[in-house]
Image (cartoon, rainbow, N blue to C red; front, side, top):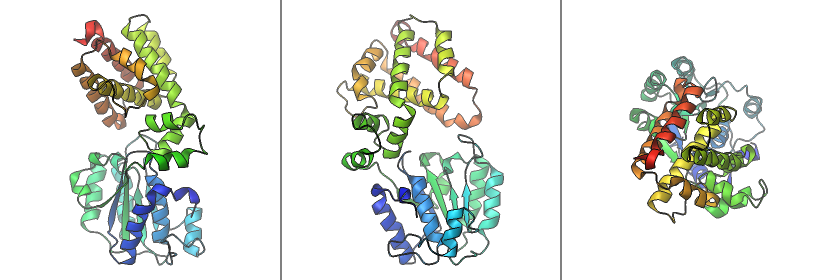
Length: 331
């Protein structure tokens, strides 16, 4: 098993699952839940390999030496099924769930469990979720379903209630800093942890993708629009040249910080501690209620992201909404 799949803040969760397996109490459906960037997919990969192995070691990990483990490493194990969207950000459709349902009723071929991983489970559309529910209601004793979700509240309650939840909290800051220490510039560790909400893998991603710079540029753009010093259409054109996901997520972070600082100017747990002054300045004169409304709209757009939203229309909408709430104090 790859060392990359053994993250130090997973110890308690791993012990819980391996103890349950050892005691014969392994549930047929497990929901791995926690914010993005905590390595839940790594955990699912590690657990799937261990469950497919007929002779796991003392730690509960796959032995990495048997035929089943060699098949797992090659991605050809017949008892391991992984279901994900056809394209990142798209929905998991009913046909994919029906295919896994048909295979999940078959007996395991290699002496371990048959394991089905759905990642991310919250990407299932309504029809796919309903199809999965039938499998959860009539589980096969040899099959284990692993649902990975950073937004478990988007899953139907009927599915959540039929899964045993393994929660992944954000690790202690000291542990996260230690893990990041030799992976990113030491001067950026605290800023990257802040902008990622404390999730180490997300902090690593933030460093690789330049979130700090992207968000600083966005704050400058929003200040320009607020002061009516730039051409809004030109700003949208500039936004189009940036990765849409980075821009949209940055928008959410900046608005969330403005809401927090508007309520409590000394609020510590913000995404941009180094940009506190700029964000406070940006939020001056804007009605808090309007900021709340914009924050809610961003959350709604995020929930609808799988519905093929037109990027140009979304960027123009965000620009227009910002101009509206910053008009004469946003009132």
